[in-house]
Image 1 (cartoon, rainbow, N blue to C red):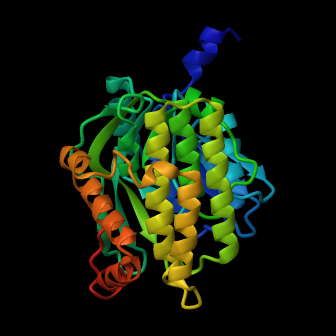
Image 2: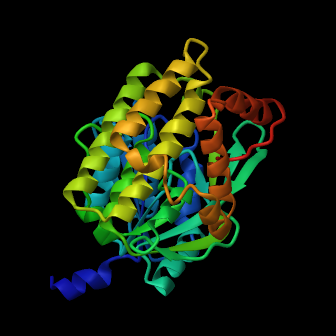
Length: 354
């Protein structure tokens, strides 16, 4: 078959769905994808050696939708490797992701694909809702306010405001198929590392769809309550490997500074927030270690042009929150700051994402 014929057969969008121990939630996820208003999509499902009935469910749905559902059945290697297997199989012009215990709104694919095409964007981002699985209560809605598109090459600081997960985004397929891999993907924050590698490969436009199109289900037993010292070590090593790729590719200075600001947000604030749930963790010691790590490996975080009053005034609430958190961090007030945040989110049930 000719190349032109193959391209004609290629779908507009591939959605990759890693599956592991999600038999209870998988049918709803699949139903939300086969019912998309954009018909020209494929759903690439990776059964990552799941010990439950995921593979049986996938085969049943594939039999009903043979032209839409693709199944990869493999031994367990984790979500990172599963995503790469899915990327290798995907035929779409753009590639998106959805976790198998979440579900998408019917216009998820159409609106993201249309936004990407109209802006000739490398990446399109939509809003999402965090929903308590047991009660159905909406805990927060994020990235739903209108935002101006931007070009990563021109203003890389804007990547800091994007959430660290791929499931509310679509990426130009050529970017994901050519980006760098990690030798040791971390068990936590692997989503963020994946995106940082994509930002390095694709420095074009980022477009936004200011609507909640993904429903992210929050379950008990979240990893936020169970992070270990070994996981912290793995995260630090992986972040260093990401930075090494930026250095090898001779990323411009402004992109390196955006990486440093991202490291501060996700290691200095988010990771320490997770650690603060561990009663055995000496948070003061953890913060001191993190500060030393950041100073040594991500040195521009202290004087970042993307964590300033002027940049926050130009680019909105996300950067204002980041600036406040940096001031608390540098003043040695992170522990009480995080304690107050935990109270607001767990007791008052009011979620403010930082």
